[in-house]
Image 1 (cartoon, rainbow, N blue to C red):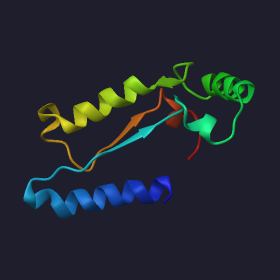
Image 2 (cartoon, one colour):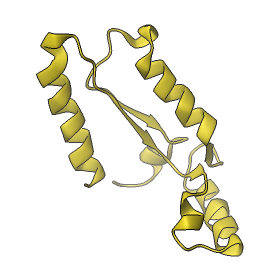
Image 3 (cartoon, helix red, strand yellow):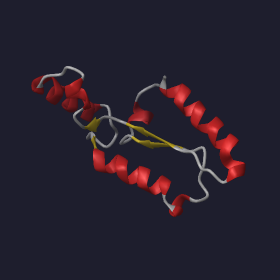
Image 4 (spheres, one colour):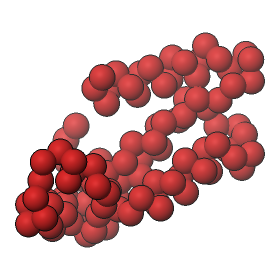
Amino acid sequence: MSKAALDSFTQCLALELAPAGVRVNAVNPGVIVSDIHRRAGMDEKQYEEFLEKGKQTHALGRVGMVQEVAQAIYFLASDASSFTTGHLLSVDGGRGIMTPR
């Protein structure tokens, strides 16, 4: 499923489940340091080059860490966001404002 489809699905589901008090939100990460790219067939050199290039495509000049995405998810799942539903939270170091979607 594409990002746009998931975003739309999130918002539609939020509307559908809101009357039952269920909140639905999504996190849209930028490039995050993880093992997923290694499993996708990148060797260590390719992965390091990918991360280095990623620094240039994020406004903050770096790629993200798994913990940063986890903290955003924790916030959205917590009572601190009890009045938040249908939100698409970018945890992307500003990548979304630098590159067209």
